[in-house]
Image (cartoon, rainbow, N blue to C red; front, top):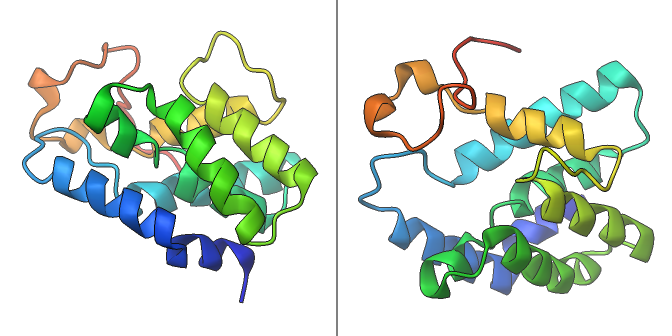
Length: 159
């Protein structure tokens, strides 16, 4: 079994994912669900392959599955989801066989993924891009109520 498959079977992951699902049940805006996680992972992997970057599929999919998992804490107590996500991922990744170097890279990119002005890891920019273009804003029923700026919204089909 590939390591990233172990992530979604990890009890902490399942618990956090369930909390996010319940918190977003009536949410009008984009959901942070498996569809989003997989879209981000797939787009990131395309960028990695296109740019011949040194990032394995296991690492890319771990990022996709874990980058928003901290939303469970954000919804509970207001902790920024990238910070909470680093804590949650820091517990899950070693249990799924990721080594220290891989964990450090994944945690850094999770921590970076909301701040396009200060990427600390070289692969953070492509992950940020994948996260944003994974959303199909032009087809969203809540487009006009969305708090994202027009510049941040994805207005075109790509990849």
